[in-house]
Image (tube, rainbow, N blue to C red; front, side, top):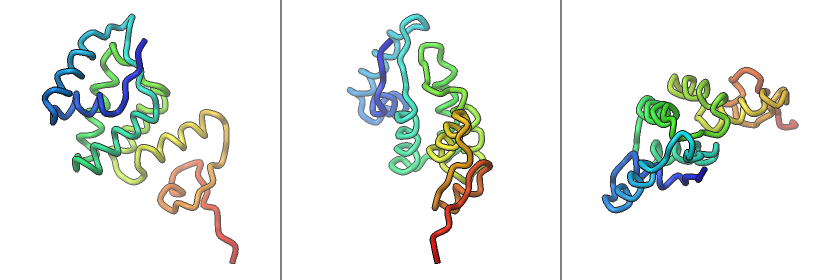
Length: 134
């Protein structure tokens, strides 16, 4: 198994640099279910951020791209059981994918509640807003 960085997946998806896109396509074409490419949580989150903030993709387009990558048998995503429901909720709006993955990891470890100062994140189930002292 090899690991893939965010920029390899970005070039593969965006094809905005022809030489790097070709190199990314070539690398991914050599992957197999027996010799897959590994994508860690951090790469997934960073890819989402790059597609949204740098390239202006909608949540729906980002979710669609991630779902297609997850469906590829030649790719293995870390924490895919957390990622799939996080993508579904991310597509619907509200908290970003990173926040949703943080909540999923907390729940998976039985660490309840997740405390935060982020009011948007605190709206999610299993998350509590930490109040500042008055």
